[in-house]
Amino acid sequence: MGKRVGIEVSLAISEAVKQANVDAIAAYPITPQTHIVEHLSELVAEGTLDAAFIPVESEHSAMSVCAGTAAAGARTYTATSSQGLALMNEILFIIPALRLPVVMTIANRSLSGPISIWNDHSDIMSVRDTGWIAIFAENGQEAYDLTLQSFKIAEDHRVLLPISVNIDGFTLSHVIEPHEFLDQDEVDQFLPAYQPAVQLNPDAPVSMGMVGIPEIYTEAKKCQDEVLKASMAVIKEVFADFGKRFGRRYQVVESYRAEGAETLLLTMGSVSETAMETIDRLRDQEQRPVGLLRLRLWRPFPVEDLIAAMPGVKTLAVVDRAVSSGGTGGPVAGEIRSALYSVQDAPYVASFIAGLGGRDITIDDFAVMITQAEAMAKVKEIHQYKMIGVRE
Amino acid sequence: MTKKFNEKAWHEYDLGFMVTQPGCAAEYRTGDWRSQRPQTDKSKCIKCGVCYLVCPEGSIVLAADGSYDFDLEHCKGCGICATECWTGCISMVEEGE
Image 1 (cartoon, chains in turn red, blue):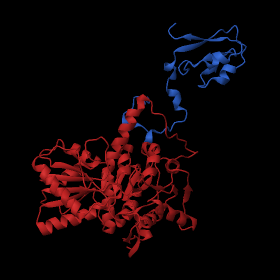
Image 2 (image 1 turned 30 degrees about the horizontal axis):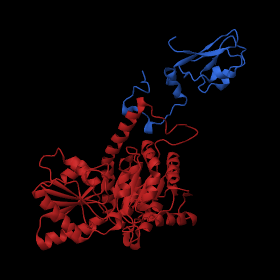
Image 3 (image 1 turned 60 degrees about the vertical axis):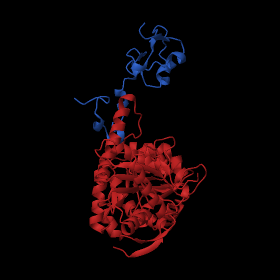
Image 4 (image 1 turned 90 degrees about the vertical axis):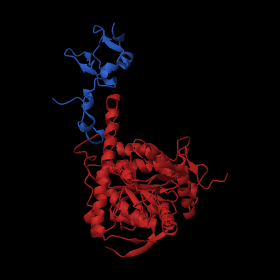
């Protein structure tokens, strides 16, 4: 195990990608993701990383190139944000359909308009149904660890699906944090060279991306969804293996001081660290039975783990960082309400939308949400969502 | 007996629904799409082979006498052969007539 190094989170992710010894990187710069691929291009240029770095004219081309390099059997990486992710949209659906294990960092940023370069989760929520595995990191160490683990999950022959590792733009991407890097031989033992199941090869020709006529399309979508759901077991297996080797343990749903809690907050991404402060304050200073769930895995959605993580809980306050326009609540809260609908004595779900377009969510904001959720639960208030901190 | 492409269960296809057998598109009977069928007046056929060259589906086959027949299992009835035939010996007739 290496020593702790103070380094920008974007560069720590680049280090993980370098240690994963990727073969191909295709990317287009977009704030706040730029530092990651900028640093990778330097590593390739100076000969530290033996990979093809393919600069392209748009994110649509970046993801198209990733499809090509992954189909040719190359370990493939890219990174993007917001508008860039939106421009990739068409190809995002094709990558999992072709079963190509591309790994992508998304430095989460709000979508225009209004134009915003700051952080929320509207980009990842807009590609919810593309068929990618989606994982959230809370800090730089997690971003580094999860990037390495993502290659192993994606390339497992039981999976062969693309993964997005989501990190909050600026809040993580541009912050210098202490990171504990693995030694290269530890990475090599954990993550052996990629063995493609099938690849484009003139000696054994295959055609990828065929037409799915009506007699085929339904079976193709069923297969894709079953594989995505089944990836859950492999994700847990890889998390467990990583934990055993290196001592940093990951769960698809993480609990914080949730024992005996009657009210739970539910968060995703870096705000979870602020939420922990709120829980500590309410538990230690006010002796309130509250706790926190952090959803690490967004796709496949961990229904069973989530239900198991809230025994006896009466109120769940779900914090969304995106608006599902014209919908029935925040996108995460909507999924959770749906998952809990047939569960006996399910907790009351309060949906809060906060932290849009880079607005901070403070320790006090989370305390307000918990208090408000408990009051709403008492009268079983029917609501779609409450927006926190909006000027009325 | 191996299942036809449209009889398999969702888990029986190749990875990513890719095609690993070159030329297997021939299994699919595109002739079902046809609403008009090509017909030759062989007395006018000069055996030039233009129809054979222009058919986009490779559905025109050389007959023993040097003229051309149609592979009606795959001919979609597009009518390019009838339009391009130098002597006008190919005509399109409605299916069912």
